[in-house]
Length: 508
Image 1 (cartoon, rainbow, N blue to C red):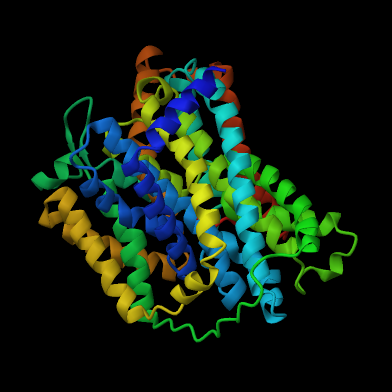
Image 2: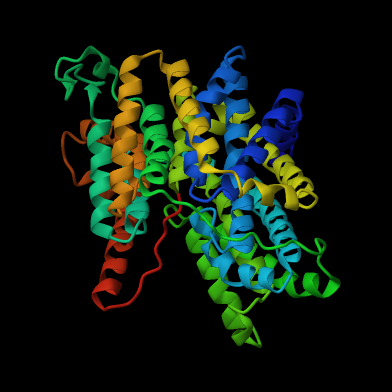
């Protein structure tokens, strides 16, 4: 009952006119981000952080944080909705978690059922959003209360688990993912040491004393990195957009989709809760599960409506599930939630067990806005399917200058520093070359966000134990987290050594 009271307060926050406007802007931009191939949810969220900062500059800190995170979360799950549009119409996934949708979605489009496939994707996404929201309401408070009992040793081990989970499943090579994680942790050490006040890796450059700004690095690596990739590799999609006939699904379509939507939503939610698993893994697993359960598995890949309903429900439920470790434990489960965490920290709001006590307006306002955002997305996506299909045809020559302008003006508006503009450009070039050579970028962001917290918790633990490292193994919870982290790294490695293909998470 207490959770329901908090949720009611959250709806009071989310239903304020400016927050409704932020949610609407977020889901529209998110859908557009998902529809445009190449611009994933990470790039979209990173790009809009400086924009939200300038929009909310006149509000008090908690209201500003709540409004910003409502808009950014809208972009996150809006992109999950929009990613299905290009998969179905062009056979080109808008982002990695929509790869599986293309298998049957495009085949349905070729049969003239593009509208039905898009509608089922929208309905599945809506149901998944509601199921993950119920899970979030039920699990958030108990989990945060349990996490309050954690000491610095438990937090250190939990964050190591978060890093290992993302590193173990990010990109095509675990070695490259680990290298990027270490790189993220290294650049997180730049600046003045909080305890001793010693300058580290600053090379007498005063601007570096405060460290590398998370916002600048994230926008550079993701948004500008994609821009350089598009310009230098001259990606021109000459795909023909499939014609959209009937929009509303038949009763038979709904009957065939109801089971996959429910199963995909539940599976996706629980996979989303696991740090590092992400929406891509959820969509793969739900598709495999439906194929196994089907009485006629041969129809998959040839235009089965279940092949659209299950993965689309799973990837949206996973994005809701990923909010649980972020809000309750302060552990981002994916690259996008790491960026959302960085955005909250910018407003001096620390995600974790104390979030629900110290900033209930932010936590419950976000949860309530996710329900409102899902309703908005269903209302927008059903009648505007044909409009969003037109977004695909936006030429790169118009889109790229807009992304560059938002990146530079946005970062400068928040930082007021020429150094940050130079850093933004460098990060864009680095981001392009890393992507070109299959180095995943998400672990860098995760290392940058978690690095200072890992260091602080490690120091606090070693101070209390007089430098004895065994304290990390003496605490049962800490030991369990470290064992899971080790298994998370070793099991995929053993599977690869045996020659098995490991499903990889590129979720951004």
